[in-house]
Image 1 (tube, rainbow, N blue to C red):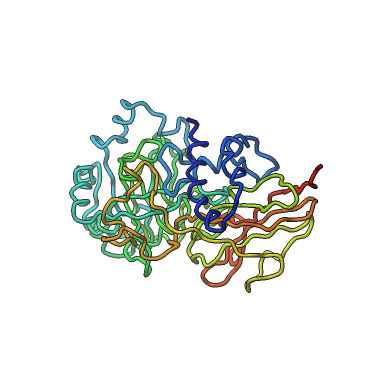
Image 2 (spheres, helix red, strand yellow):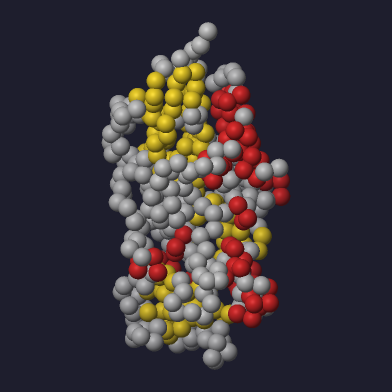
Length: 426
């Protein structure tokens, strides 16, 4: 079966309970799953095909269904197994260096280097994992793309444990880290973090990890195998794949590839809503079911709202007090029983951060740095041309796209979808 259609069915099941509770008859509009997946043509610039979003509808995304933002020529994940073995992208040959930046005065007592034969290897990582492994959910999202690339249950060890093995002494302000890119300096992809973010986690935040598993399975080459960085509160450019080298530096500036491309690389993940099912046309007199997802960023999520106004009637997008004219509340759907992502029976493994060890339910909902699904039933509208919109209200009371609406720091624009209400015939 087509993956998009199959995953769309799962979204139907998630939202069906909501509409059934309202006593809504005639679920044919939501049951016409092939019609959803058939919307394969992107429209105007800034819009995206419905099928692209449907293919990532599970709460946890299968590794093969992530929107892969790969770079390089050739892209590292396209190398043959023999080539990966040769360049250190296989557990048998993987090594990770941790050393002082030679272009700064950072001091490290025990550098872990290939030259000295002390580089950190796979067996050492697995030994560290026996004591310090953590698991948490995180949405992977790109700074300039309008929808999430996917959400995973990531497993790894906090980077700070490795940093301390190198014994930094003084003059360390940032951590520079690099992924493999064909041993070509022009292709190298790199990112950085303040040393404080690596060594200490803000209250309620997950640690920066050396990641080796996604949804309970070893990383695939496409996912960054054998080891990648995962920075839980940041956009995907911080979570560098195919990790091989770390420099501890006294430089105070970021060295991020994305910064060189005119992006804000210190922007935390933003909160925003997107429509998933929004009918292109309905008959007058019909209720209008809509569904969607919301990304929960640093500022949390309090509400999801929708508007349906005649074409050209635009509600205020930056109201910080709700409800404002034209906006109405949707329902944020509860956690699923089946988390998807290829987990056996859709069940989470034990010891997932922010989840109960006994009930395996999240301790709070929604969870920051993840996604949630939402739904709303719109009342019948008069015949005419309309525009559907959705937005979030974060935990601080700010309405999307506030408080950080600026481009290059994360795409949280207000989505607009056309709707035609047709006059009844006969």
